[in-house]
Length: 355
Ligand code: IPM
Ligand code: MN
Image (cartoon, rainbow, N blue to C red; front, side, top):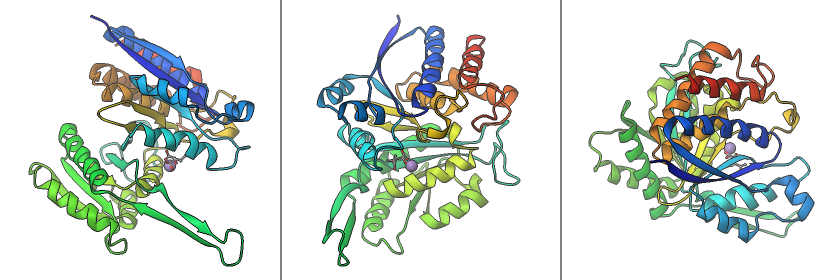
């Protein structure tokens, strides 16, 4: 019997709508193959909508998004809107309000994709970052005193709760077990300097680890992780870390796996609604040209299927991506693919259709 999913779509700004369209194209083909039905509903949010209406994230939209089975997001960010307004008002607000406490970011080098790391290939680069997604420096705790004067004081504090840290670490252990690859979980922190926050992380990590004797554990400071991700990426299987460090190391991860054009992420609430997105931004300079790589959005759609438990649809999408990257696409960079944005979507859709 056909299973139906209601998917809320936020195409957003810049190249967001272009790449989301390709993700939807691919999802539709996977749906046919797997006897699934997707109802897509568009929500207009982002810089253009804000400029036209003054609305950032209306309550009615939040209420509608809460009821969806999943959210598919293109990009949020506009060159004419002051940084922070849309990011905090839409993206972060949704992550927080929907309590999407995990940001799952796979770093996988596919065959046919060039990594800037010399002498490393697909066998060496295949790990996943589990980033805490609702706390840390992103919680917005702090403030300014004597703003704009020579005596100005700015405080921005990192909030780490036992509950928030523990649920993230538990998710990472479970994910590592389910992934069933090297079964190694690395905690990324800064226990030598951030002695309050990462003491909590380390204690919690060690306590939870006792319940997972089948998972090998490891610890590295965030600065060292940056070094090892470049020098020995094969050491990593799953990395768990806080919000800020996770933000930073996953941009490095995106480069290691070949570029922003193929890096996908999932903002996950395992009990409620999750939101999937390409992790690159709105790329204003490529907007409307049909040259941006949609694979990050297509892989975000794959992550959505995986998270919804539709493993066959997920693996079909990945097979299509693998074949396109290995056999067809010249380079993953915008304008260098040998195909247009929709050309890449067509290619992957056709591969899936032929499976
Ligand atoms: C990301 C982005 C966001 C973040 C910004 C746009 C708020 O960089 O998803 O990694 O910092 O989380
Ligand atoms: Mn980021």
